[in-house]
Image 1 (cartoon, helix red, strand yellow):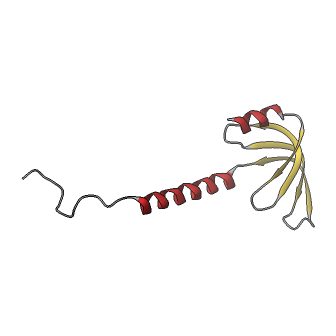
Image 2: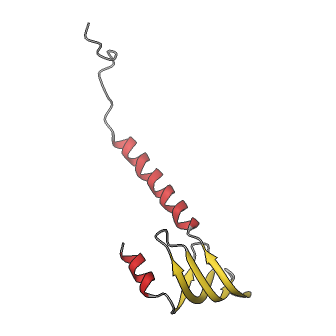
Image 3: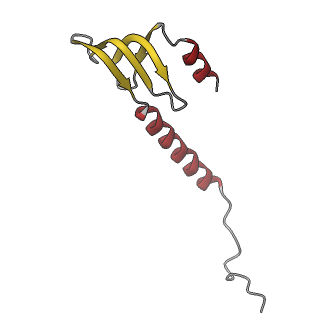
Length: 98
């Protein structure tokens, strides 16, 4: 839970948030929750190419990108696990005890 405690100590301070898609958000951290959703004030959003800027008085940065990447990582681990699994049984049926 270390990243959450670091975010909680940064409440009230200016932070820079960079998403996986390359967008950046500069602003003052007002609050954060256990899912790492952030509430920022006085935000400047920068586009992926760095040539466009937007100013927002308040913005919620939701943590959807991280959840999706974790979901994909879990799927990859599951596929690796299935590849390394030994085949079950000897092909004789289910062993009903007859």
